[in-house]
Image (cartoon, rainbow, N blue to C red; front, side, top):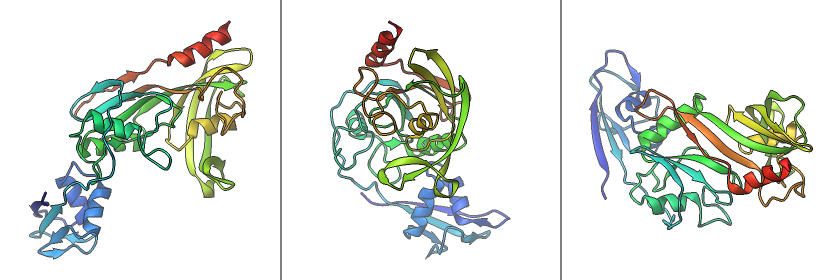
Length: 306
C-alpha cells in the first residue's frame, strides 16, 4: 500500500505555524500526530522537507503531506465476546468485565480488550499510525465497567479533547473499608511512581507527581464498610484506589493499596465504572451510558445488608 499524498496551498494573509495550519486541514489527525509526520520527514514546504513543526508559512507557500499506510503490529484479533452497549461510525462503548486487561503488556500478550476489539471489528481504522483500536482511557484489570473505543482518528482526537477539557463525567462505585472523614468531599493529591515499588503508583509531592482530583459522596453505609460514588476530575493511573487509601478507607479487595486479606468474600477489588456522560462527535447534547453492578458485587452488598 502506497503513501497517501495531499497538497495544500497556503493563501492566508497572516503567517502561520506549519503544524497549526495542518491541524485545520487534516482534522482527522491530532496535533501530535501531525508533528510526528513533520519530524519523520513526511511534510514538504515548497518542495523541501519541513524544518520543524513551528516553521512559518507565508502566502503562496505550497505544503505537501505524505501519509504513510498503517503500520502492522503483532496484535492478533481474537474471537472474545464483548458486551457492546452502544456503537456508531465513530465510537464503541463497551462494558468491560473484571479480569480483562485493556492493552497487551508483559504477561498479557493475548486475551486483552484490544485483541477482542480487533476480533469484533477487523476493519477498525488505525489510530496514531498503528493498526489497533483507539483506546482513549483505561480501566485496571480488576475494575469492571464502561470504556470508550474510538473507531477513527477524528473520533480519537475528539474524545481525547473531551477528556482533556474535563467535559467527560465519569462515575465509579467503590466499596471501602471503614468510612471517609466526611460523607462527601473532594480529594486533591499528586500521583507519581512509588519510589520503593516501581510497578506501583503513590500519592507523592507536587514536584514528583501530577495533579489528581476526585470528588466523592456516600451512597450507603454498613457496619464496617461504606459504598461510595466517585467522580474523578483527572485521569491518573490508579487514582480512585489511591484516593481511597489517602482517605484511610481503602477499597475492599485492593491488595496493593489496601488490606492484604479482603474483609468480605470477594476475588477482585470492588471498583466499577458505573456511569459515563459525554458529547459524542457531531452531536450537541450529552449522552449518558450506564453499566449496572456485576452480579458478584451485588452479592457482596446483599451479604452486608444481611
